[in-house]
Amino acid sequence: MRILILGGTTEARELATRLAGDGRFASTLSLAGRTAHPAPQPVPTRIGGFGGPEGLKDWLRDQSINAIIDATHPYASRISANAVTAAQAAGIALGSLVRPAWQRLPGDTWIDVANAEEAVSALGATPRRVFLSMGRLEIAAFAAAPQHCYVARMIDPPKDVQLPPEIVLIQDRGPFQLAAELELLRKEAIEFLVSKNSGGSATYPKIAAAREAGIPVIMIARPKKPHRHILADIDAACAWLETLREPHDATASARGV
Ligand SMILES: NC(=O)c1ccc[n+]([C@@H]2O[C@H](COP(=O)([O-])OP(=O)(O)OC[C@H]3O[C@@H](n4cnc5c(N)ncnc54)[C@H](OP(=O)(O)O)[C@@H]3O)[C@@H](O)[C@H]2O)c1
Image 1 (cartoon, protein in one colour):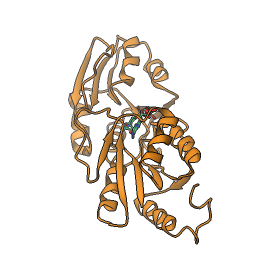
Image 2: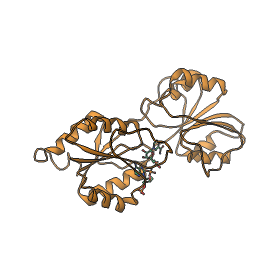
Image 3: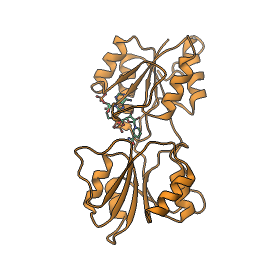
Image 4: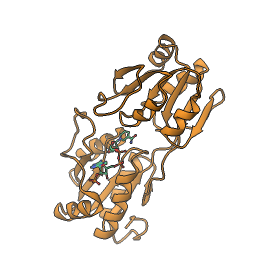
């Protein structure tokens, strides 16, 4: 059975690892190509956009794909919309791994905002020391608030992006540890953390560290991410793929077709 995994996440790599050890499945992992040196992957990988939903539909047909698992990041909504459209057009089953959002815990001070521009407003006029934990494209919005001093962490350095004048760039990729996150907040005298609600454990320590240090988190809301058959975790994804191998036992809706 030929599977396309839409990736760029820890879950996608974990799923690919599980399927790589199962001779019944031949998986291809697809990455957008945003990071210059992606982590090694356990299955054949293709890199770069498909050319919208039409391009994805053609690729699915060319590659005789039987099922798609959308394991993209919760903030990658365009590729998920494309996957829904292309899967429907090609008559291919689509399962979507939906990573639960982080929930506020006692001691958290979260300021909810809709996007990076609202996060900039939420910082206010008074100069602050701000930790930006987000992709290199989103940090451009903070050039509109040059009064603050920023520490920005990302995988690759920003290219062709306007930056605020006072910014320290840290190139690093998760998983991160609580003690190191607390030390970073302390060393940089951080007053605000700006974050997406990515969910998962790899980048959660910054949220726990902010709670422990009493630092408010400006939390950028998740976009609406289209999906078909929702899969809670890797086990659910594998179980769902099993049902697709027995199409006579599964209803079309359970298969996400
Ligand atoms: N957004 C985040 O905060 C975030 C964080 C961590 C990881 N990522 C990963 O980074 C990638 C890009 O995220 P994004 O927010 O820029 O996505 P997006 O806005 O949903 O997608 C923009 C375009 O990038 C291409 N694309 C996205 N994911 C792809 C994939 N897995 N394989 C092939 N093409 C893909 C598609 O191009 P075409 O229309 O040409 O097919 C898509 O239309 C995703 O794979 C995501 O899982 C994103």
